[in-house]
Length: 136
Image (tube, rainbow, N blue to C red; front, side, top):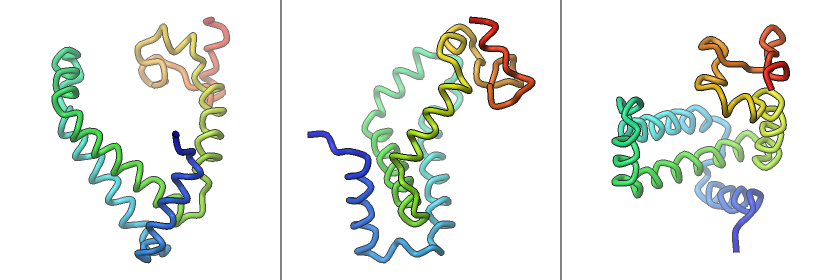
């Protein structure tokens, strides 16, 4: 049976609290750990953005290591949420609702740099950039 986000958040909160890792002063360290883990994951795939076959090969060959990074980053995200008293389920749901409006699926599928308004894409967060509805 799959655990819910709330169940995972509770489990991690219990784990963190048992070790006294949920003090407010830990926020800085948690964020540094997140950056470190993202950097380690980046080292696996850096400079492969233009060679999609090689990128896929590297990701497949290093799947276990990448799973570890995703696990570490996810754990740290839940840990940070616990320290900051953020409901992860609500935060993710709120972002998905916002992203639905900001990044319309049909437009995004057709444009390479769709989410980067500086590269010709759109982000409906910015009033001067609301062109996606016209380009459906």
